[in-house]
Length: 446
Image 1 (cartoon, one colour):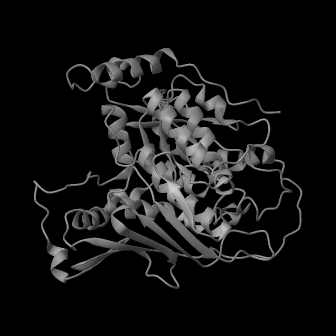
Image 2 (cartoon, rainbow, N blue to C red):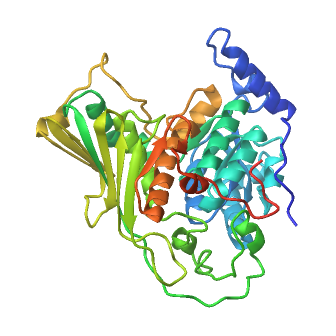
Image 3 (spheres, rainbow, N blue to C red):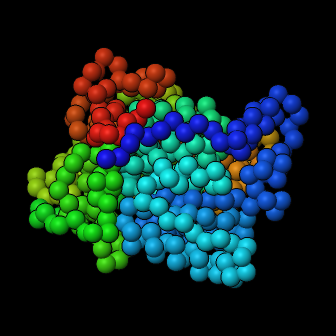
């Protein structure tokens, strides 16, 4: 039986970090170095714990190992084989230092709470299945850890609101894995739009791929090295199948990404990236739509039950329409359409009309957006300086909310009216019940 997530009273070191950070808001804007706080060595070392080390988790782990200031002290995964693989990766990287005693090795945990309880870990990377993101990130904030959390940020809007408020309360540095914000072509496209280069913005088109399908699968014995009950966590109990969880033989695409108990499908999986960019260009990072309606079809059979091809129309302030649909109907990426032109941006790609926009210069006295050239480096720099990251939880929550709202609209099949300030549907109890999900006992949002 797993205990309820504890409140995690701040450690002395975390308390000092929080107190000194807060005091700087009312004093001179001097950066307090980590050596003063006692949380890092004079070399500005950042100690990191990695929670979830599967396909994406190991990719993020490898990235963090590439930074000299990072020292990975622990990994955590409910799959013992994956946890041991990650431990081997870490200790091979630090081999020379481990041999001479300057590095004490990488600890392995199955329960994330034990990792969070360690006073010598400054920050965590949370790269679990989507249904676990919110609860673990909330617990990490309460434990005084800085947080790098993969997208989509949370499974429900309620989780996102609690996480945003908790991060703000404890003064944590947070970064959502919406790395497109740290790519120059996305920033430039949004600056073109924000500075009126395409005239009055009226339509934004977002194209997302489609999830695969599968037929029904048989129940299987739970592998001895997988804590399946912990893997399910707050999600409803379901019988085990390898295609429900992740491949055993390799680090291929996991089946949970197509199961609605753990993921909302491409509307969240890729939507968290492209709707985030849409919000950035629309200057809607801290708000949301006024109304929306969506249509799709859901599979009649099979384990993988997220939406199929879809079409969602959002209405935003200033009479801006955002249309999010499958790439069979829309170009992939984000297209901003204005009264005097358009700009289309995707990974490694940007196009515009008129073509002269592509060589347009954004002057210093125009709207210039936050500039980052490396998403994880930006996080690490902000952990040290206590400055705001390019993709903090408060912004990630709003981008993710647009994804969740789209899923709700597709499931209800009717027009919905959203109060972005209060974060609830107007006069619609059925839709409002879909903004949260009761956690399976004994897990609680708290």
